[in-house]
Length: 258
Image 1 (spheres, rainbow, N blue to C red):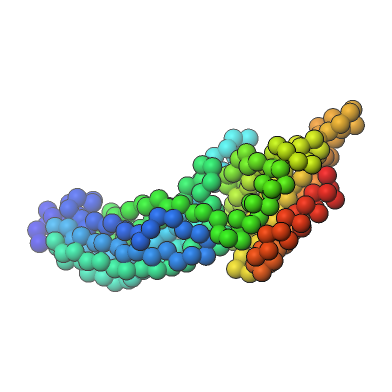
Image 2: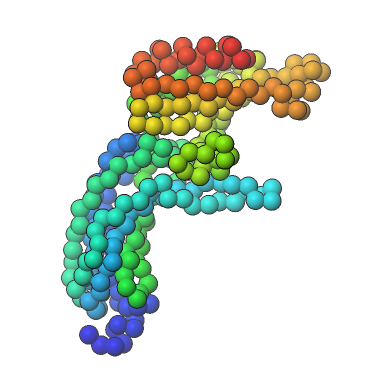
């Protein structure tokens, strides 16, 4: 093991390489992500303090009236610790961990990826990024289907910084903006904004119902945001097994506040 090789490895030249291989690239919240991490030794023996997998995403927050894109770790798990990688060797380490229920869906321009990090003593740490798709589970799909059946079309989905009074485990919330395109609410609502707070046993909906302004008073109400009503609806996972019941509960709220 030459001094030159050790110095080059410390700055990432001839160092160990990592490649994470996922069993698939599409998951639903609450599902196990499985795969293996392939480590290829470099030109010198190296000691890895630990290997960590992160589930990453991006969200927007406002700074001085400007939207700034931030990254956030949704989840992290340590796969192994105190591992010696011999020069030129190859190793495979299997892993399995649960994608959190509050992981954002990859709708709109919201990315989600798995970041693999190797913590190597006295060296530049190798990393690997693998994009995944996060699609709605059956219970979340029941909510989306109910809203669409009531005549709404999804216009926008994005992750934004959560106000302190609404902050959960993560620093952001995913919002879905709908516009009425048919049905009873086409003429009475401007838009419907939906935030979901998923948990293992329930999904809480935070709805902002934006009524269409009519006449002078309506115009004034819109200008002062008096036409917006915020309501909450909590649905258990068992309730979400009944699509017609989900639609009825959401429709009842819309009728009450539109």
